[in-house]
Image (tube, rainbow, N blue to C red; front, side):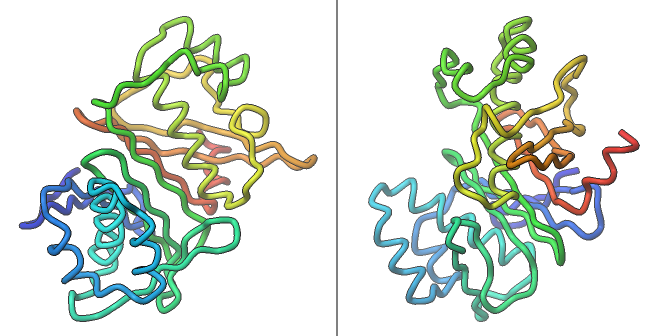
Length: 232
């Protein structure tokens, strides 16, 4: 279910009461976001490193998306910081977060516990699908090459990007360490794509939720739903 607000914020149903999920269709200018975010000094420094105007809007909208999810008023502030591995967190709010952006959309996820990850991929963007071998394993390549559609290509990439963000560890190889369970997998408008992270002798199961919209594909996960894969 999609619920649009007066602004371009889109509330999305995460299918879980403890997971907040939303997207932003970027239609506003930079001043709109700055007056509602009230950035901290470290955030201003980060924004200053982003030179492209559209990238700045993507970055700002993803942060405002978090405020909308947590129902934090425009007069109040939240500070977004990054761990050494690049995983974002809030210095003054207990929820775990992740955000993403692609072209004219951004999205965010928040949960009171569990590591979260999210990715959004704009379907109008041109992609070099000959790069599939760089991030797909043999099983995924066979699945994709049996029906080399844009949906299959992007869904596998997006699922791996989501897991990378949730896991929060640089050095994780999309091809070697992350495996989506695509054997006999059929893509619907929304559903669950099982996946595994196998690294340093430890294997962990994940459920990647996905939603397909006319203009973008959204994937997200939270590590507390790993156990649900036993019943998938």
